[in-house]
Image 1 (cartoon, rainbow, N blue to C red):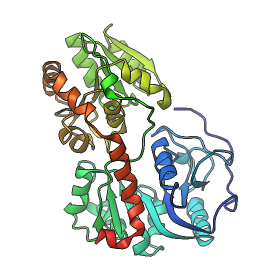
Image 2 (image 1 turned 60 degrees about the vertical axis):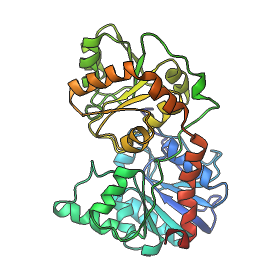
Image 3 (image 1 turned 90 degrees about the horizontal axis):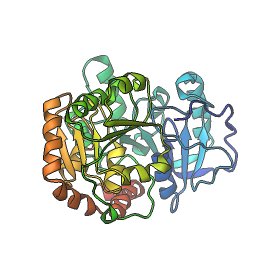
Image 4 (image 1 turned 135 degrees about the vertical axis):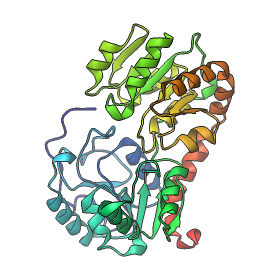
Length: 369
């Protein structure tokens, strides 16, 4: 992740913008997979992507007036999203929405108070909630839980990312329409067939992500220090120094690698591991499977049911349980060919098509009855 954000972004809402849109997509930062999704939808429909800055929680696409995208975009705040003035952003959002019309307003999650507040201003039938959080992550207890319920009930349609995310809406008796999208966006792909993948002996294991506590990388260090198998760790974060000091020689660190360059890293390894004890979805799991790697994920990873259990692409282990992780690795060593065959059978063209259609069908209200 880059450490500095552009010092200036254009806040003139009139630049090359339409007066009317099919979709207005409200989100936090320009995560590359959300930008890709909006660009794909914009091949047939008009889309305005609304953002409030940049942030290190995801890999960002850096946008400005000269960026070639199929969708229009506007920033409500210039710079680091965590330093934005929320009241000012809300006022700018009101000004923006008064200047245009749209058919559907897509809210990417409910963590932005500015967008949450706006959902009480806009008509419920226009509001669509994209939910990356699952039943594993969200509690509806107390005052905060009541606020979340109120926000959700302002939505006419919910687009949960997967099965565990859909359970969240079922648990509170959401009365609107629900359609599972199958992912959180479209990751970067290059022409590749998993059948081209070569297996190494011994198997090479890989982790890609931030080196922060919630990712539970320390569990990987502990296990691979014991088993001696080759493990590569890609990413950076505040735990990097400590993890390096604890790791033995069979564990290597690459630092941060740009997302568009990760394909070669995936192809040079055999198994991907995501040990997070909280992971709303886990787009890296999709990336790994696309590049031909069976996966081992914890039971706290949001996509574990959709991308691993149902597709048979790998193994799910109990979060924070090193014996469960050890057993998963042993199982992978024995049944690698079975998991690899499941990986090669995934139809990515169809998956992407269905994800885009979950959005485009919003314009045909009858399709959700």
